[in-house]
Image 1 (tube, rainbow over the protein chains, first blue to last red):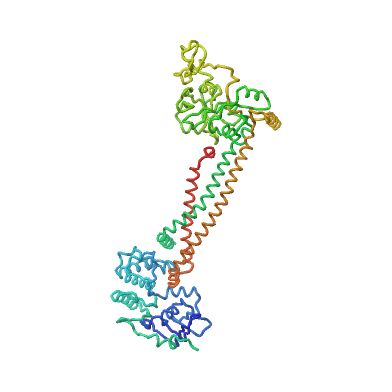
Image 2: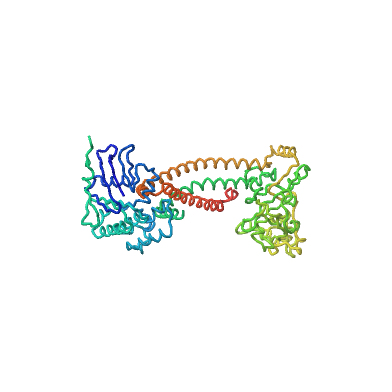
Length: 227
Length: 388
């Protein structure tokens, strides 16, 4: 499903350096990448999502479902993020002035994908699944943090993506809410045989991951700049 | 598209104070120049509609605007500084068509002027009777289309008292409406036309008197009242009908009776020039060309409009700066939202469409508000004549 080869990345005018010689995650696998804050986990996810473009020309290669991200145009990357990928952010990134349902539907509303009756129904089902069916018209700012993150998960999975990238999705939640979020993700992934790549600094007894990779092991050079 | 509009509305609702402020700023910067331009155009039209007719005016020397505006637009009372004899001397010239104007009385609490003149005036001003006949008989009147519309059932109009207490004044007369003019889109629509003789009856030169009265007429408040051989104008008979019309009598020489001004239509330029030359050195009278006086007035209006245009340009630039700053600020505050949309793979076209929709709603709101404000300002703007 996901393969990284010879990935080398650094931010301009920064000593931060990321180097992953090889990483392969199979379809349907749930992978947790752990590491301390600031070690580069979010950078890795952004690279996997095509949000941060790979430096070209370069030998770095990220392949998702057999397609190299480096060879995609910006429009193709947007479509990849919209149709193949579901992204869950640490800080939810909900649009505060929109209702719960409008937030979940946003990837459809602002893309070329048609908002069909089926999508609408699926959205309603998801809202019901997270127990907020009576809150559909409310603004997200009126929800608790746990509820907001569950809404963000719904937004990520509404388009039935095959790959879910989660960036510390439970970092700001208490144990119960965190459990609810993980449960929602794993349940969806099990139903759709979707691949999950989650980065977190604390798994806190979360069960359901097929593999847990310490970031330090996959990033061979650590945060050090090569000579 | 409807979902994009819904998202745009949701954003604007969440920022309603900013949205309302922007709408008001934009609409004001659009409304003020448009409304000013339209109002001054209306003033110009008002003036232009009368500037050529009559081509000349004869009146007392003094305020030129006053004479022109009062004679052309019947704005307020114009003192009777001419005599009917002076009209006769002008009227004898066959190269001139002249009509006297008597502009002292009014009806409806001063709202509608009563214009004493001759039927020649109606012809010269191209005023056509829609129904009825002219004001040939004493005590009758012809009303403009505007008055007829305001009083569709009226058969008569009562003149106003010349002063609020009516002391020493002639009592109001009932004027019988015998004709209605076609709409002229001019001050004539709201004027009451009567014959000069009727106007002089209103002045007191002519009157009815009670059966017992004999001798010479004096005012009913005169100290001569009650003296033998004196009679006073009737205080009970204040309408002229077929029954008493022949009992009206006038005192004194008609050539001494007062009129306000004389409207003159020269047959050709030479006649006009000769008449103007005749009165150049006159100490009491002046001949004016109304179109020239109106042009002077319009020059003032244009000067004011020019100053206002500069003010509006500054206002518009300020508004543009404020709007652009607000939009840039708002985009800056929404940077995170826009980044999230990008992360979710939203189409750039759709996101731009969303922002454009928000802007379009604001602009539409501003234009609708401007339209309403222009209508309100236009309808509530005082007439130039009222201002003068």
